[in-house]
Length: 135
Image (tube, rainbow, N blue to C red; front, side, top):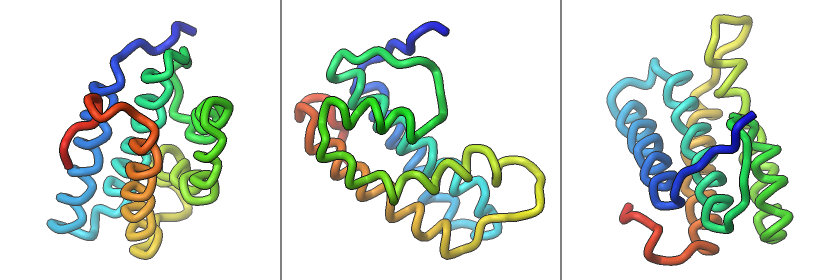
């Protein structure tokens, strides 16, 4: 696979857009729990990619938050504190995204929105100020 190439600020802007989309959908229509959760997962995935891009670490195109976090923690071990919170977001990229036996709950989506904020704070704390867009 080809490595992903993008500037950290571009990744963070896309992450911020996914986060805003999740918040907007949550405020507008809570029947869209799967879509809200998907945007939360995407936001965290892109934050991790921003961190890697800022450190010059190449990564392949993937939606695997655990694998991306593994790469990030090799460079910044303190980001390991995110693992238990961000790992469940993977269900929004696969299990809840397609028809199946289960749907996300309101509690899971509320938790996902909280995780996005926590991940933003933890990840951007290790990035240069000039790459971080305003909230």
